[in-house]
Amino acid sequence: MKKHFLKVLENYQKKFAGDSHVNSFLEYLDKNNNCIDRKNMNGHVTVSGLVVDNNKVLLLFHKVGNRYQQPGGHIDDVDENIFQAAIREVKEETGMDTERVEGIYGRIPISLDIHKIDERIEKEEGEHLHFDMMVLLKLKNPKQKIVEQIEEVGDVKWVDINNEELFSNMNTFKKALEKLDSGIV
View 1 (tube, one colour):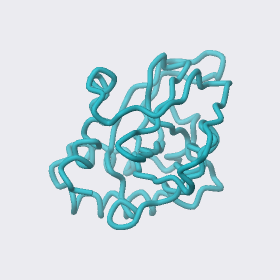
View 2 (cartoon, one colour; view 1 turned 120 degrees about the vertical axis):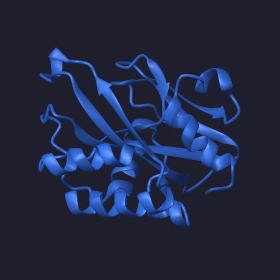
View 3 (cartoon, one colour; view 1 turned 45 degrees about the vertical axis):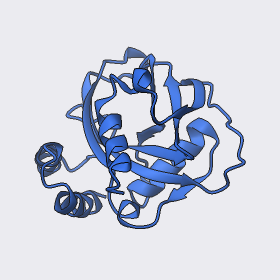
View 4 (cartoon, rainbow, N blue to C red; view 1 turned 30 degrees about the vertical axis):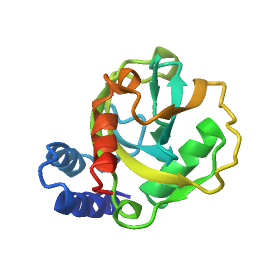
């Protein structure tokens, strides 16, 4: 999986040379072979899915984080790439069947983010970092119904892409939406 991450980051950097997160991702990967192991308290690579449909984005309320965010989570050993992992996570958390988009964002993330995760005693996890690769996904069928995963998810809903109040404290999400809005997609 590490080789896959390096290739994805190389291609991402060609498109977004100014993204400061790339070097941090590369430094992390250089020092960590077990980069998807959730017990690695140096941090681990995660994925999230930006699901867009008719100027709306799919968000969920994460109970532990106590905030709205895009679906996502840890990469499993069975996942072949970041897209497969994100598609699986979206399905697990929202019940929605998604797939890769056509074009460049079917090959690279739309955004990168590094964020701190607080200690979770019940999961025997110390404070650590998530090196998140957000990928752009589309619905396989627009008439699907949301099915919330009740363990960690408190709410799932479609939110208008122009909802500034909701997105005001979500910098990575805003960066991704700006790429969509500017036609970079």
